[in-house]
Image (tube, rainbow, N blue to C red; front, side, top):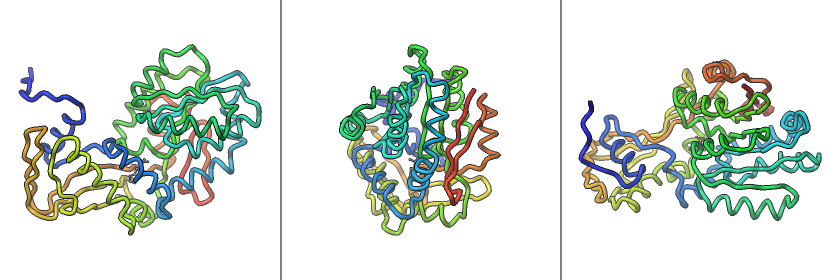
Length: 322
Ligand code: AVJ
């Protein structure tokens, strides 16, 4: 039996920061980028010319909204349109508008970790599309998935946009997809946005912009540790570094210590030593191709039934069923 550690943690954040910075090589989970400042920085990223993902998915929705929503509506029975990690809903609104113009009966159920984000989304929807039925749910994907599990049997169309699944290694993505698969009924659909393999330079530019917004976003995790765990990371003593492996399709973000230094994290009672040029791995952003998507689906008990691409084939949205 493994021995219990003496340290107990108040939050999962404390535990993951502790474990990640004691590991070799060091790592921190990208989900902790998203506090109030991080949400704002990600909004800025989505508006950068180099971050092609958002515009490409928007183009797909504009071009294919008729076919996409027809497939969602299928048999004409009412359905729940559930979105995992809804954010500002900018892209989804294109589909919501199309569905409502076609008088299709559905309820939009956006799920997000941030109540703040959900409140903003709900009020903008009441203003822009007052006829759309909205039921927001606050929570993590997995809490949300549990709630989906206990619903009333109405047909489900689950949205997971923006290549959000790309933050997961294939192995973790399969666990996630299996969860979703397990909660799906025969006629339910799963609509997923996945960024595609492309010119490696385009990917590096998207994750290493000259204005340094992505660097700020990456370093925000240090800012957050400073604030929430009483630490003294100096943000200018770390470098944002991006690599992309065109063979595996994995983009990786690092924070690199520019010098030998020690950082104190008071709330964890921890001193973290960095050698000069030592790394913290903070994020992966996986890129896909059709063969990899088919393999992931097969591993998770899903099938790809349709796919939609932008003109330049930068990004694709796939419809999966059980
Ligand atoms: C929100 C996970 C899709 O990986 O492309 C943007 C986050 N990181 N720039 C991505 C992100 C750096 C983004 N996702």
